[in-house]
Image (cartoon, rainbow, N blue to C red):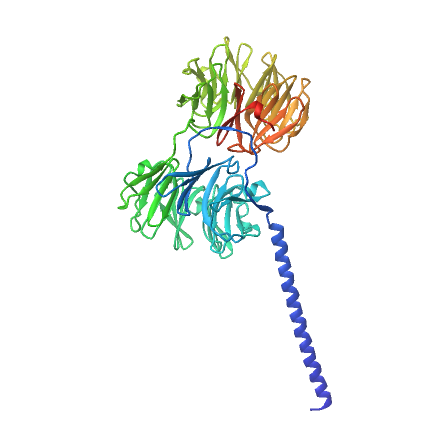
Length: 640
């Protein structure tokens, strides 16, 4: 080969090597860039959280007025049965004996419990019982102590469903932020297509996942994409209550029946019209737990005919159907049943203990002149507890149902109860004497608040105000100058009646609206007014969205340091005592305003829920109602 040819060949080889090196370097740089990009995306999407031992904070010495236990989820752990509910976690031994109980607000965070599952997490060396909460993230229990997985952002702490993977990962369904993945080191969204789903339940794996939602039907995540199935795709209802998987089959329970999916595709509706709150699928049958029809079974194809199991009518308000070993159990709101070994009926295993109160969801409180405590519920009427606390009378009917306000009249002994179905008047003996509705002259049946006014009463409704006295009933609404017809709260001081509405505040004197204030013409920060109380020479105004503001007698608004902010005050959940003003908030516990110093404090620890819905005081005690129970404390011992 000539010298010239060898030179050309050498140059070609060198050029090729250089080209290969350049290509390799380019590929290396691209790979590095992709890894960096993925890391940046991951870091941007990572959700800030802490893992910490859970040690209950020193809380005020609240006394709990026992409310009925409510069962939500059950799981076997360390050969014991654990049952979780809004009030706490119960541990039962093999013989059904209660061994330990862990109450929310004491041994557990002040948040209702919503779920249980067992897992060995990637950051742990032992199996733990994972307790999901409505507001406080996850709590992991190893049988000896608790630790908490606590996202900084409140929205990511609202857990609705948990699935444990074999690799130590967790899939977390949230109330508003879709599906998250926890790998022991980070929490990230599973995929953008699931990021804003309002999740009710999960079933499957990280690679093939079925996601039930409140309003978008069921979402199926697989092969890197998400398919949505709602009513137009065949689902009986867009709100999914339960999901069960059996091989290639997925069963999706709704309030109007169960949808069957085969191979990821909608097939047909089973048990139409059934309110399917829980499902368990096996190769031989599908067991359906319902809200009001007991337990049904579908024996399998052909036919798919729902058959009520013997004795299953007792198992109403079903929350879970679970297999433990070779046995099948049904958990209801109040009991645990085991399937008869022959498959014919259910045997009661556990029942909740008796309680003082009739329900957990408190909506109104009052103490009458005789020392009776009146406890109104969101949807269960009311209880009257005598002064000794030994006798409880429950009242519930078509009118005494959804309680909004309780107003005792000291002189007459009459107790006025504002409900969603009228104003119910109780006599001094605690019996219903009269029911007032639109037929009696009220502007609407739904009464949101009631207060003494002049020599009679003022009633708030979604249609305006009704004034009621010896002259009869007269109504005020927007046509007469009320700022908005939807009135939530009333307060009286001297000759002024202040009406808090959906659209601002109106001041009424001598039955005539004198002035109205909104965000447009005053320093008020939110138009939706939920509570108003007179405090000395001023008013304190609770809002839905801007916390609490002060209103002076010249009708000038000013913010309160620590008390005005981006949170919600619950309807009529404000109470004035000589030393303080107490405020019931939605999600931020009990607000406490010291009238002497003007300082504001918040109390959450020790409460059964951070959603404080009602307040009253009597005999030196402060009573605090929440959506998860009722506690009391001597006011002198409450040190914010």
